[in-house]
Image (cartoon, rainbow, N blue to C red):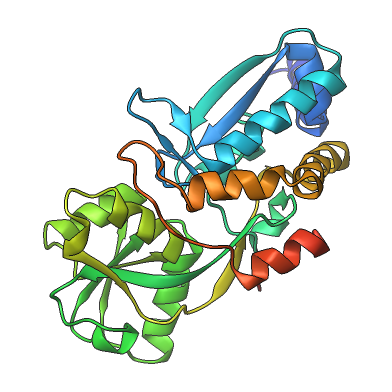
Length: 298
């Protein structure tokens, strides 16, 4: 390559880098204004936060809140019509897809913690949960100390998997930890005997148990290992969009609509099987409805 060709190549590369940087620096609201659409990420089996209904469409507590946020984005962007796209994500790809602009917001069951806060931003915490275990009811497993020599599954890419791996090593608990691609696959491993216990956020375990063919076959056991907040995930360094999302949540909370939505998804029969989780608000969540904090877990 001669010097002239090198100069042309360098110039083209520089232009590409500059425009690429500008794209990623664009605020979500400006992106919606220019494109006329927004892409919302959902989980396929995070009952009752984000999951597929009988028609294969996303639904749930988080998904409904996202709908309110989309309405506010439409109003703020000054659009008469907004195209809403949905994108399934997993524990492994949810952060990369948000960072690269494939999705614009994720309303699922993502823990707000300090490590993730280096890569993305989180809105006001809207749920609190702790890691426990789903087991066969006749397994004899009562808590984490009953797992020596057992196979434990957790969803790859979750904080639960990391916590269990560290506990197993640090406390020499002696269980075999394996990973599953999603919550439904992890539950299936317990159901079919490929794993003895599924370690995950307790509210998700209750949802999976309640929606199973025979809920009485399963039990959720053990004291919560670590209480963690869930929050809506957005791109980092986008203060205008974070303010919009936090504002929608604050309005829902102050108007009483948040509590009504909570009762709908956690204290009433929900699709697809009319199950009722009977999961009243935790003290942590009640406190945060007043504090409106986005404080991460450690």
